[in-house]
Length: 74
Image (cartoon, rainbow, N blue to C red):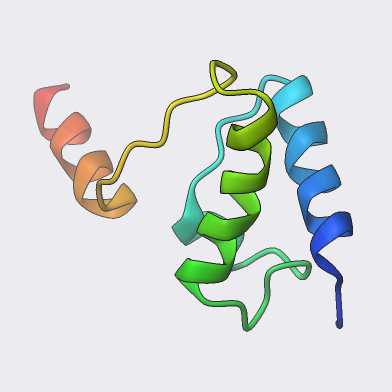
Protein backbone atom coordinates (compact mmCIF):
# COMPACT_ATOMS: atom_id res chain seq x y z
CA UNK A 1 0.00 0.00 0.00
CA UNK A 2 1.58 3.26 -1.09
CA UNK A 3 0.85 6.12 1.27
CA UNK A 4 1.79 9.74 1.36
CA UNK A 5 3.20 11.50 4.43
CA UNK A 6 0.09 13.63 4.93
CA UNK A 7 -2.16 10.58 5.16
CA UNK A 8 0.18 8.93 7.66
CA UNK A 9 0.36 12.05 9.83
CA UNK A 10 -3.43 12.40 9.80
CA UNK A 11 -3.78 8.77 10.87
CA UNK A 12 -1.34 9.39 13.75
CA UNK A 13 -3.38 12.43 14.82
CA UNK A 14 -6.52 10.30 14.77
CA UNK A 15 -4.81 7.70 16.98
CA UNK A 16 -3.71 10.40 19.46
CA UNK A 17 -7.20 11.95 19.48
CA UNK A 18 -8.62 8.51 20.29
CA UNK A 19 -6.23 8.25 23.24
CA UNK A 20 -4.23 5.42 21.70
CA UNK A 21 -0.60 4.83 22.54
CA UNK A 22 1.62 4.83 19.49
CA UNK A 23 4.65 2.57 19.27
CA UNK A 24 6.97 2.47 16.26
CA UNK A 25 7.41 -1.30 16.49
CA UNK A 26 3.65 -1.79 16.39
CA UNK A 27 3.06 0.81 13.65
CA UNK A 28 5.34 -1.22 11.39
CA UNK A 29 2.58 -3.88 11.35
CA UNK A 30 -0.03 -1.35 10.22
CA UNK A 31 -0.61 -1.41 6.44
CA UNK A 32 -0.08 2.35 6.29
CA UNK A 33 3.50 2.01 7.60
CA UNK A 34 4.24 -1.37 6.09
CA UNK A 35 7.79 -1.38 4.68
CA UNK A 36 8.49 2.07 6.17
CA UNK A 37 11.68 2.56 8.17
CA UNK A 38 11.87 3.70 11.79
CA UNK A 39 13.28 6.97 10.49
CA UNK A 40 10.22 7.57 8.29
CA UNK A 41 7.87 6.89 11.19
CA UNK A 42 9.86 9.24 13.42
CA UNK A 43 9.64 11.91 10.72
CA UNK A 44 5.87 11.49 10.68
CA UNK A 45 5.81 11.95 14.46
CA UNK A 46 8.16 14.94 14.23
CA UNK A 47 5.66 16.75 11.97
CA UNK A 48 3.06 16.54 14.73
CA UNK A 49 5.60 17.44 17.40
CA UNK A 50 6.54 20.59 15.44
CA UNK A 51 2.98 21.96 15.53
CA UNK A 52 1.86 20.47 18.84
CA UNK A 53 5.03 20.42 20.97
CA UNK A 54 3.28 19.42 24.20
CA UNK A 55 0.92 16.87 22.67
CA UNK A 56 3.01 13.77 23.32
CA UNK A 57 6.38 12.57 24.47
CA UNK A 58 8.65 10.40 22.38
CA UNK A 59 10.08 7.63 24.51
CA UNK A 60 13.07 6.01 22.90
CA UNK A 61 12.92 2.49 24.27
CA UNK A 62 12.36 -0.88 22.74
CA UNK A 63 8.65 -1.67 23.12
CA UNK A 64 9.12 -5.40 23.55
CA UNK A 65 11.91 -4.99 26.11
CA UNK A 66 9.77 -2.54 28.06
CA UNK A 67 6.79 -4.89 27.89
CA UNK A 68 8.89 -7.78 29.19
CA UNK A 69 10.03 -5.68 32.17
CA UNK A 70 6.44 -4.70 32.98
CA UNK A 71 5.34 -8.36 32.87
CA UNK A 72 8.13 -9.36 35.25
CA UNK A 73 6.95 -6.80 37.82
CA UNK A 74 3.43 -8.25 37.78
